[in-house]
Length: 252
Length: 218
Ligand SMILES: Nc1ncnc2c1ncn2[C@@H]1O[C@H](COP(=O)(O)OP(=O)(O)OP(=O)(O)O)[C@@H](O)[C@H]1O
Ligand SMILES: [Mg+2]
Image (cartoon, rainbow over all chains, first blue to last red; front, side):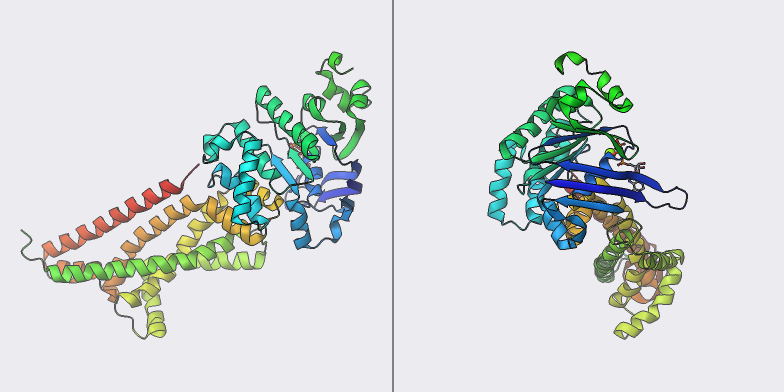
């Protein structure tokens, strides 16, 4: 579903900063139905990699195919249409303060030009799905972090995406809420067949829901494979450090 | 008490002031809002980066804000003559008032829009929104409380400005306070006119605060 070939991303030097090589000759495939984990320390290039997938960033060189389409040749309009089919959720939710829960979920539907009736129906469906129908008229400022993320997820699912991008979606949440959000993501993956690409700092998140994982360090993927395999025999130093805390017993 | 007050004159002056302030606030917003939006979106790394437009606008805005208001009014009165054939009366005064206040308001709009979380903008971008939608439904919608506060501040300033503008030919409460009140030693007229000006400021502030609070859901 997603092919990344020899992708390099450089941020050119600015007045006082030097050039940054955020990604270096990345090769990566994500298959339909995967829950693909991307782990690595801060600054490793995880967000940059994720943002390439919906064209928020353009690679300096290399090619990216999503659903068989090469991103580089899409027009702005075509790219916007594609983005409507790729949901994204964020660590800090990025909901609109000025809109109620329901209006937030309606936003992507408005962007896709849906009718009022369709929007009404779809937002109800989605809010019931994430368990927030009772709070439909609340404003984000009145919700807990976990609830905000549920709104974020409902919003990301609004236009029936084939792919869900999660940039540290649980990093701001307590362990219990994290578990419930991860559970929701897993259900979405299984019930709706939506492929998931997810960034995290925590191996426990990978352990909980991912089937594949890529470990990144300073712009490169240093380890890649099936989660079970990588956990059983971590090769790279960074991977070992990440898996250390996990206690091997439940992995085998 | 207040035997020396010519209520008819006061009433007419109040209407003139309200007209000056009302029209100039309206046009200030119509002019300053797009100017503020342009200032923001043409900035580096923003929705419609364009350094030439950004820098030129910034210079224009700063020039207008740098010149003291009274001087600006005096300089701009000929513009009214040019545009509507006279520099006298409240309608003529709205032109210099608007030109003087719009850059001021544009800066406030700029500040308001810069407060909008870049993450929300990015979320909209990731949803496939076009620029126009991002400006309207994210930038402007999210900063509405701050923009309304900005309109309130601008309107209050325009009430003050309008008193000056009145003196140099616009009419209104400032003019009456000066000519009838101060220069003709009619202290009661001076007091009444001042009181009404203060009352108008107070009412505008109340209404502005109330609306701003109502739309603020943060
Ligand atoms: N717009 C940008 N301009 C310049 N440099 C950037 C930009 N975005 C990211 N970078 C740099 O690219 C590198 C990778 O950043 P990225 O955000 O992808 O890291 P990350 O792995 O997501 O880190 P974190 O875990 O802190 O979110 C960093 O060195 C960062 O400073
Ligand atoms: Mg990141």
